Length: 288
Ligand code: NDP
Image (cartoon, rainbow, N blue to C red):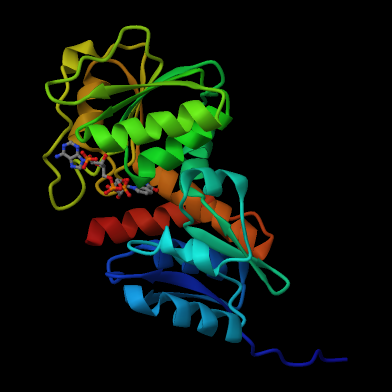
């Protein structure tokens, strides 16, 4: 017997403002097509004052989930039925999934970083000493997940002392790691006992592609794994300097792909085709 037709699309997407340059649609749509799923990823402009109404709409239209980007990652907490423990610690949600009628907040940024560290760099953070440049949203997500994954020492290096101290207090109070703050008011020398160095600032992001963090680059040695969160362009001057000194490097494109892949699995229940997603994004960035 021929099966009943089913023309219904399952909806996911991103709420943001401004949102037009958010590239996530490229990798999620590539994944839906590869797996033959009748799912759509919509890039939706939502002004800050309209987030409550947008969530009513999302519930009314039975969206399967949504991503949140600037400026909604913190505000969204008000509109959820539950928030995962790590996202609660970070105080920010970038992915919402549904269980029946319940909307659950998650944060996949730090998880994407960890998966890239484990799978692309082959490194487990358990017992490691990590230096993080930055104390913004990306740094919060990465440090909380590193701490929960067993990194023993985290040094937060940040330009604004207030944000740096806040993050260190959070990590020391709420996770088993030992965190310290270092003000970033002169070129930073990476301590020799460091295992992993992460640029979690926006320095080097397109269009400022020649900028690099203010470091004493000769303090980078071949024992370090050096990571950047900047996905576009993936080969940042920071990573090039590190590679020239023999360090292993990890680009931000992997983190972006894996955080999307984790969201894809939360929504569809299926393993994401990460190679296809990575190729689709790399191609889109090359065109940009
Ligand atoms: P935030 O605005 O929350 O934080 C920015 C951070 O960068 C702050 O620590 C800020 O320091 C620091 N910073 C910016 N400019 C300078 C500068 N010139 N000198 C020193 N420090 C500087 O941004 P996010 O944390 O949300 O995002 C940071 C980057 O991470 C972005 O480029 C984003 O694209 C990337 N990202 C990548 C993801 C991926 O999947 N690859 C996922 C999420 C983010 P201060 O506190 O002093 O202002």
